[in-house]
Image (cartoon, rainbow, N blue to C red; front, side, top):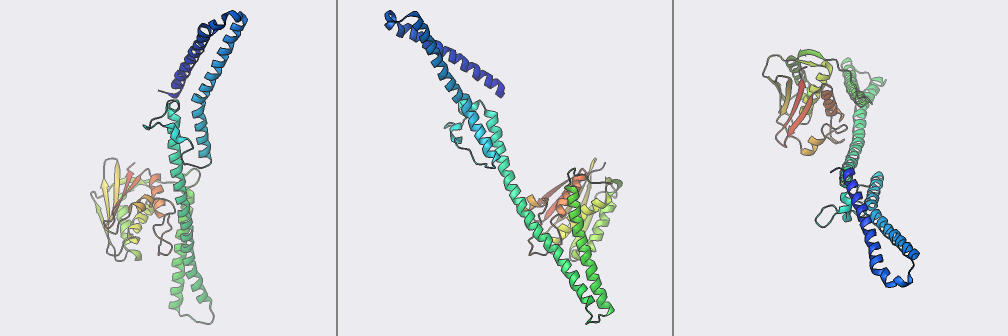
Length: 364
């Protein structure tokens, strides 16, 4: 039953009870009390007494109406005010809303939906407050981490530049070349970090739009090339990368640049967070309307807490004391880039049993 219908029925019942109560009071006064004083009571006094009794009964009914209809409203308003002050505990008098059997009392049952919505809102706001605090803490840790990641290559660049500019030493051609190579490598690393930040800012813009330029091309050959390139990375030394597919070619619409970023980030995540000799399998599975890319490793696996947070922005998965090539934005970027392709990503993992990323893209 809707709240307006329930309110109308309760109000109608209250008016009927008010009329009956007033009539009963007047009847008792006229038939039982006035006959005792009939000789000394005039007709005008009798009419005045009836008026007084009717007014008194009306005041009683108004008080009862105020208690019955207004009491729950006052409780609801106090609860809303408490929520507006970011206090999500149960309001004062909450125990009076329910009887011993845990059911709503009659006068509160009138606003059953409102109380349910407020209870749900309070729970969600409390959860959002906890999540906001966790995100803020993660953000602060991420800022410390990204500052550390930017400072480290900058220290190398400054140090090698100082050595090259030091006139007290004459460096050989090979030594100078090695210094310049280190400077170039650290500069490239800093550039990657800045690109991550720029991409996240673009993804988090007000409209959230990202220029996606899809081209219909073979996802099998493209993915095979990405796996081959990563196998030649210095970080992949000691890891075993495998590629499997059930079809020689599968045409899919995707943006080349961003698809490369998606696959690289997931594969590098499987390498960086696992020990050497870990096997990393990339499997492509074809279906009628979609294509699935499974990236599976037999590494250390992930805890449920890491699985819940891995796609969150600012979550690094490592502390600032741990060497990490990432910015804490890699998997968050992956998640949003996959969404921009109208795709989905799922994660399955257990500790000591590896992890499986399942990326699904529509072919068209």
